Length: 81
Image (cartoon, rainbow, N blue to C red; front, side, top):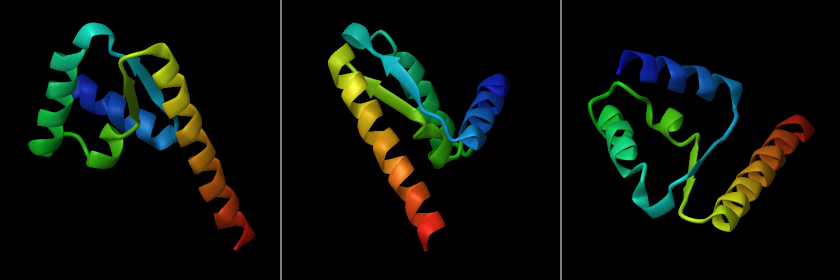
């Protein structure tokens, strides 16, 4: 769990997204582990949300595009204020 925590901390500092193509629920156990890490305080909730999860490739791409646009709009709003 320690390596997983360090990975989440590292990814969240980079402000990037991680797309997870969860075909037929293959990664459900991994996602439960992440949720348990948040629940137990090992992983920050904000770090957990770097994961973009979808059951289909099209859905994953759409979700990642929406997040990318939102992040860039927030970035632009911060620098234009």
